[in-house]
Structures are given as structure tokens and as C-alpha cells.
Length: 476
Image (tube, rainbow, N blue to C red):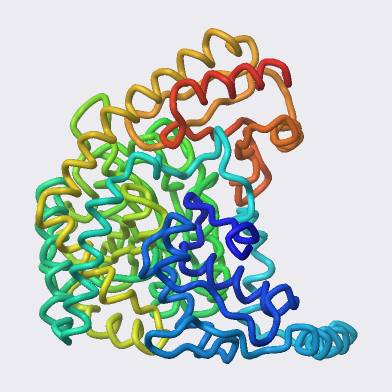
């Protein structure tokens, strides 16, 4: 039975459509679905897998476009490929390719040198950082928004006006919640926040330009700028976040996470923010502010975004929906300084960083009808409780080994080792026992100065956190 051979992970970074398409393609290519085999109808397969019918339909359409299936209206899709023959040919060709030395472009060579060690194949188990709880997302409401968006698309009602609707909703939300000053035309919708960094690097960074990033910090930023040929310099942190070293000339670009430093969770003070703005030359030095989980604040009202303090158009503001909603909604957004809007729009299309119009329309409705804010309010209360539960458990059971740094917001925290201990070895030992963490040293750009664990709390219920803590005690 085909359903028994398909394993969809709803918390995976890869969307359900991509997972289903890949797994069906593999079943065909390996001959487990032979030529002439009829697949279940989209309605039946969707019901058996517990996904929307659109998910199955999109997967069937993609495989038909690739030549794996023959699909016609009212008929079940039929496999058109002899998997055994196709694999044999591909395997022989692959062997020949592996025997030759691959010549990479300068861009790809730079990218390979970044050592961005995030593993997207790591299992989603407690206490993996970087995720919210997809199980708490109102999927029924979201499905209705998607269905209505699909109907409008079929009627050819999706166009520039509807794509503007999401940007207008975002401009209002960011102004009221984060103090961002921007009009709808300054907002670009992209497939992810990482896509926003790639776009900025492509437009602004030339080989040899200096770029400052936090150290330790978000490795995806360093990867994007390294790949563009930049000289990436890691800037040390103190209790106020990223420091500006006296005597250093301003670089071409500065990347920072001032509202909730990644990974430490530290808040950059107003004085420090003003210092960076004052030392950045308009038109010469650009600042990229990544507010990756700014929706989640627990102990006080959030500090307004750095972008709102900028009077000279020097700050890009990057955000994402994947942390606040579900990983399947992989949309990011970029608030662009007015002087660069036209250039960034053209570059976005040339590079191909285009987000689905249907997803944009559905998300605009989800926000406009109040579902997004209602979900955020509920998640703030839930994540606040989970953060406190993890902190209390760490102090009670592992207080002699780890010191937890309690963030005022966000979805993860840092627990530092009190005595010298190799954190990467500890992460490996925890993984073998069923607990996923991130080594703090792996986030360092230069030689690691600190060792500790980056632990997620938002995605995990209190009983799951408690079980993970018991496992950690046995490992230490």
C-alpha cells in the first residue's frame, strides 16, 4: 500500500508538498511504483495521509510536469517511468561525474568554505532550538484561508493588488508592534529570511567589502556574506550585545540581531543602538537588522526596532513568519530603505526569489481577520510558561553543571557550562540519548571563547521538557 511507504513530517523545515513530491518520486525512481501503476485519487491519498487535497494535487502536478506521471481530469494518475531502467542510467552517469573533479564557480567555492554547520536533517526532538510549536497552530483556520486563496487564483483574481494586501497588512502590524517606519511599497515578500540576506548580499556586497557580524551569531548571515566574497569580521558581545571596537572604520555592512541577539538572547541598549547608527555613514554603511523572533516577548514590552530610530534610510529590517506560525509557511519579508526599493525589486526577480502569490493572499487574510494576532497572544503565554519551566528545571537538576541565561523573549536560551567542558562532545552525547541541542561554540566565527548549549523551549510541552531534563541529568 502506497500510504505505508510515505512518511511526512509536519515539523520538518521542508514543506509537505516538497516532502510528498520527493517521496513519490523516489518510489517511482526505485521501481517500487512500477510503470503503469495507478496511484490513489488525490482525495483518497489526502484523506489517508491526513493532509489537504491541495498538497496531494500540487505533488501530482509537479511529477506530471517532470514526466513521472500521466494525469488527466477525472482519472487517477498513472506512473509512466520504468524506475529500474532510469536508475541504472542515472547511477552510471553519477559514477562518471564523481570520478571527475568538479569545477565550482567562485560563488559556490566561497559558500563551501563557510562551514555553515546547521543540519536540516537533524530530528525534531526536544530540545532542538529554533522552532515554535507547530502543533498549536490553528490549521483549520489556515486551511480555509488557503482554500479561498486557491479559488480566487482559479478565477484569476490574484494580481498586484492582492499581493499588495499582505504588504499593507505587514506595514500596519510592524508599525504598531515593532515601531518600524515603512510604507507598503518598501516591503518585499520573499521565500524566507535567508533569501532576504542572499538578496542584500547580491545587491550591496562586492568581493573584498568588509562586513561585520555578531560573534557568536547567526551562521546563515556569515554564509550569505562570505559567499558574496566579503571579508566577514566577527564582533564580540558584551551584556548589551554587539560591540563596536574603538578605532575600527565603518564597514560596508553590519548585520545584527539587536532585539534578541542570536544565540544569547541579549537586548541591545538604546545607547548602543544610537552609537551604531551615528557611526554609520548614510549611503556608505548599511545595517541589516534581523528580528527573527521579535513577536515573542515575556517580561516587559518589547524595545522598538532599530529601523524605527533610523532617520537616514540606512537600515534593512528582516523578518520571518516561520517562527510565529508553522515551518510550512516559509515566507520572509524585507523592509528596504526607500532609495533602494527599485533596485532590490529588480534584483529579486532576476535572482528568482519569488514567494507564492497564493500563500501571500492566504496570509493576508489570516492577518486581516485577526487570526495572526490571536495566535501570537496565545503563543506568548504558552512559550513564557515553557521558558520558565525549562529554566527552573535546569537550576534544580543541572545547577552544578550549567548556568541558564534567561532571555526576556524568543524561543530558545543559552545554558553555559560552569566548568571547562567540550560542548560539541556534550551535544553528541545528548543526541545519542535522544535530546537535541546546539553547541554554542559551533556558532562562533572566530576561535570559540564560550562553551554551552543552545536549547529550545517553545516547541516542547512541559512534560517533554521534563523528560529531556531527566535525560540530560543522566548524560552529565
